[in-house]
Length: 101
Image 1 (tube, rainbow, N blue to C red):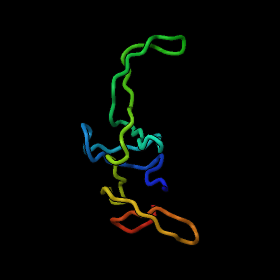
Image 2: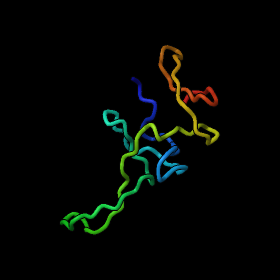
Image 3: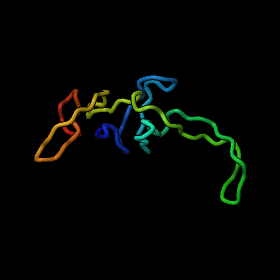
Image 4: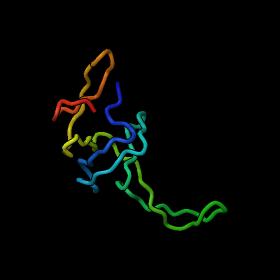
């Protein structure tokens, strides 16, 4: 199935402890059906000090399920994503506005 959400998309969280927060997707894991969104689903990770960096309690963005994310359209509202063939190419369409993403 084609990817509905991609790296760089602006999304809003629909469910969970960060419901309503917005962010940009920094990584997508299609096999796990998860994505990492900047500033959302932050966990504290305890790391040991090494030659490369300082140790301590470091915040890290954890993966969130794709079903809990919705793309933001040009008006800043959450929308579902559809597909349409234009000029022989498959493009993503915002269901709220009907425009190509």
